[in-house]
Length: 204
Image (cartoon, rainbow, N blue to C red; front, side):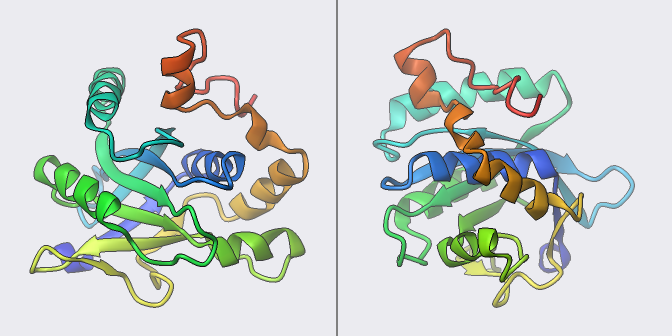
């Protein structure tokens, strides 16, 4: 059943993750995917929202545990759970899913076996403003039968779709207006609790 799963990500969840990575171009960043198995179709996992996590010391456990508890409490009341993980590597030419990303993905899979890991594709992201490539700028990784994380085909095929087809057009507009400066992650929140990790004003 797992091999047939498809993942449908909302425009806002997608754009928030990419903007977070753009804000911290010189460091690795990560985030959490919030979603559920689609009620009408159990072979589809809906990624409805995302939360930018950290842009420094991604492997530190205590801040991550605090963040996950707060995320679960907030989104649980909305009927959503942690459904996956997002990672952007520090180096532009690094296209590998690293050990930190795999470990966090494994942890999430204990509670949500259909979890996915998304890895930012820097080359596609660079090409996006030039209009050369309108593919999603994230790659889909899923766990195989041996519990190893594998790239779902060269580009995820049709396993990963975006709910709103014009998402990359909107993303390009946000990039040109430097909207990424407005993204708040958990690092920012832990430094100043007045900064809201839910980013309620980001798309207004």
